[in-house]
Length: 495
Ligand code: TXA
Ligand code: MG
Image (tube, rainbow, N blue to C red):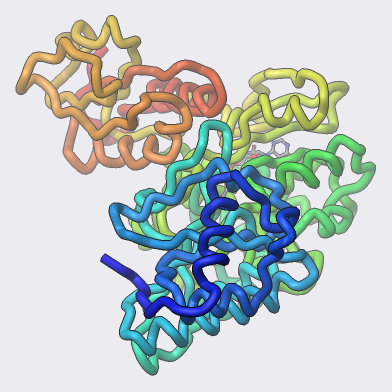
């Protein structure tokens, strides 16, 4: 399966070799004396067998892209990594994409795939306006432990196909006061313009969420911080510089202009810059300093959606004409952002999430408090939350067989692939990641909880992963799912 194949010629071999070595971390094209130019890359596209273009749009090598391997599913592809200087990023990407699209169409290729480590709003807007969507499935990527997977996007290359503009349409909808379900790297959000109190009230009504439970304001970049917060501590600037865009939410003192509807009446406000090209594209098209208030796009207390289809199933019937759902593929992180309160005496994690607390501590150079807050501060921390209809029973691997034996049938199991001792036929095994750890479980956790309901299971028995890295967030959500499962209308539960 070759996505884009062109006949080799010219200098492409040199560029291909350099870029391959750069990709595998043995050479940095910026320091090798063989700096790649737009012409090199376009030439490679025109002359080589480039089917998958890996473009580091940040230019800063901020993330260890060299430790990330793209897995093109057995396809024989040339992988290319390109460092683009920040100020020229958009122009380079533009030339590259135009060339790739043109060549791809010329040779009858069906699809163009792009992988980028991190997106600036301008680049994201550029991609989204040209119809790229995030590639479904994780088959193109395998991230090294501790690194975020690259963002992978693709678009169809049918000849003469108009460039549709779902992002521009969604931005217009927000401007009219409508709601937009939009993908982020964590979970799908139900967004409204944060400066529009009427639209924000509709978010609460649509979710069935108590109005004193504050929303997170999503920003295009850290430079919008000052429009939403005051007395911003140096810690916040440092974390924003190091970890945004990304799954980290900061709680700061609220600027006077922030509607109280957004903050649930609190004098603090939660803000983050999401690392998803579609979300960044939407935010980047709004007037500078704008924010989108977006809770997870699920009804209150239920499982957060990590696909557009799951969001549609949760809220579709409650949206009005004029509201929109943007499909950005499955969420790469899969659990909500880590919420860090910077208004307390010491930085305090209110909700473990997609940004490992170890990374936060590395940036701050000191430990943070790991205190679960009271319910009024973070409703995601209510004991019962993230709950499917099936009863959720937690165990360790040794207790698995016993837990299954005691559980009300039909029983499903989410456990390490090598965890034995489940009698054949007594339980359905849901597909589990290997290795069975937080990083592997986070992207699939909510899909498995939904699957339990789709299969009509009465009980889902889950082996809790080790609470390191993302394992803390996964175990936290599992505990809350276990407490809240079997609500009204639930199937029979086990004790
Ligand atoms: O990853 C995420 O954070 C996703 C995506 C859509 O960005 N959003 C999300 O929103 O999970 P939501 O509303 O489901 O959870 C927001 C959490 C709640 O627990 C809320 O209490 C907390 O953020 N929060 C918001 N503002 C706060 C504030 N001023 N102080 C303390 N907690 C706050
Ligand atoms: Mg939520």
